[in-house]
Amino acid sequence: MTESGPTSGHVASYYAATAHRRDARPALRGAEQADVCIIGAGFTGISAALELAERGFSVIVLEAVRVGFGASGRNGGQIINGYSRPLDVIAARYGEQAGRAIGAMALEGANIIRERVEKYAIACDLIPGGLLVALSPRQMQWLEREQRVWAAHGHSGLVLLDRSGLAPHVASARYVGGLLDPLGGHLHPLNLVQGEAAAVESQGGRIFENSRVIEVEAEPAPVVRTTQGEVRSKYVLVCGNAYIGDLLPELGGKIMPVSTQVLATEPLGQLAETLLPSNVCVEDCNYVLDYFRRSADGRILYGGGIVYGGQDPASIRKKILPLMRKTFPALEGLKIDYAWSGNFALTLTRFPQIGRLSPSVYFSHGDSGHGVTTTHLLGKLLGEAVAGTASRLDVFADLPYYPFPGGKALRVPLTVLGSWYYRFRDRMGI
Image (cartoon, rainbow, N blue to C red; front, side, top):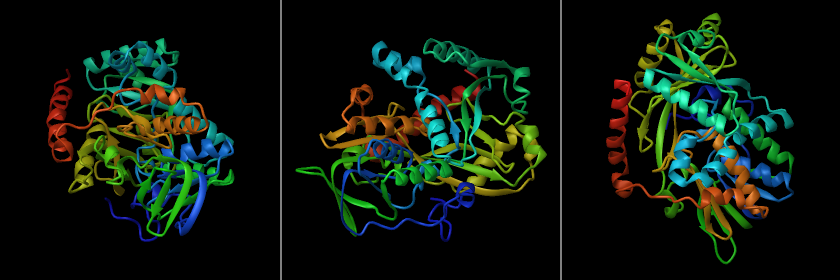
């Protein structure tokens, strides 16, 4: 991974450099007890912890490094509604009943974020508005269909824009049109997850950092062990996502870590406002997509590119700079202050997986690059299930989940081969 900062424990990102909290929480030492032990202090784990703590459960969260160390503290900071697969694809794949139920929850993740930011006064630079842009007429046709599909699920506020309609939002000649979502938005993700973690603690929850879990014993009663301590609980929630490693092989075989890269320019002043006048966040419609936005201090944060398997590219700057300059030629020659990488968990179906390993051990992972909102929703569903209402969790848990063909040895080359086809389609505009 990208080199960590000397004291923060996080990778040397723009987010870590501007995080409100720098000091580490203590590590777990000795034996503890709680109603629920949660593995992983990213968005999923912290969302579940807050849901449960608000309901009166005693909660302990164990984090291997720092709150938000993984994708939750490194991502593009974009609030994108829905899932990594379109709603009509989900209905076609899993049936109309599942499609309706999943569609009914498609806006909930973003609503959870907004509600918690307001309730707990979390300072995370939350800005409304998201824009999905098309690079070809074929992609524009897809956006027109997306508008109709979302309207059928009750979200009628999406605004279709032609090339001239993009001008108030993004100053780039690359795009032929777009779809504006007023219920989208962007924020500082590390400050969000840290603020939510503080909210957990305000409700009586406890969080231990630098406490990597080395063993989970499910029966007869759950015990979660680290190198220096253990937690006995009634329930365990496994929320390690791309950073779960080999802790639970039955989970690791169903996901693949994938890295994505982000650059942050120097502060640009008026130029940043000229390039993104309305301050919405933007992502394109390509299979391997670009995403970008303004930061609160006037930088352009530009992300894109993927590396299957989770390794860093040889040079993050060389991988992302050409993409950024193609979109915004005016950024040629300007300084890049930060460049970092982070992993998300990809599933074979590109759809998140949530369910049970035993009556007392639950898991959620595999948001497949669409995690800021989905993790908040699924964390809440984990909390609901522990509290005794599992009907919404079971909508997801009842779906078929598949391992990657070829196992860990072949999942990367086979996925790369498949991606070439879709990248070719993007280049050809088909």
